[in-house]
Length: 164
Image (cartoon, rainbow, N blue to C red; front, side, top):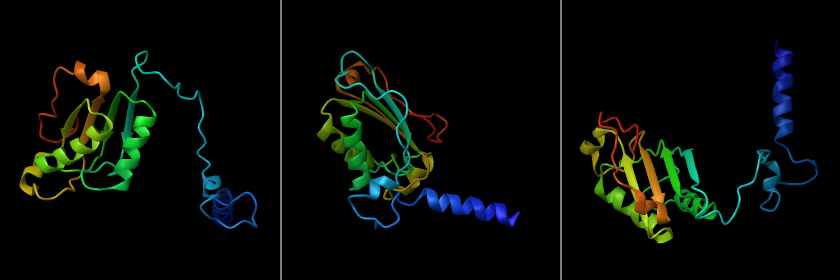
């Protein structure tokens, strides 16, 4: 059994190495280590007006109300993808805090002046309003012309912050 495990570990290490063993990892060749190549059709560009593009992602705290380069990068990527609706789970942000909601709203408004955002997080966040971190939570965002069609926003009425 040990030899099979050792062989699997060896193949994982080889998979993560550069194709040419003589090269050193640096800024210019680090992308060669990414073997998560796209598959399927590429996203059509200039789809606004003809297509409603919806993106869902479990962001694992990449979405933040405070200054966070991951949040800026995520919002820029969504803008480049011409997203109309973005749904994020596991934001791990205490959206019960008005400061956190307003800070994120300002970030989104810099990219999409027309937007409608719904947040949810556990009711336990009411006890910790000064803290940004709160496990779970969601954020649903409609941007540009689609934001004008939002009739109602809400959140999980159970107080668990499971949907927005």
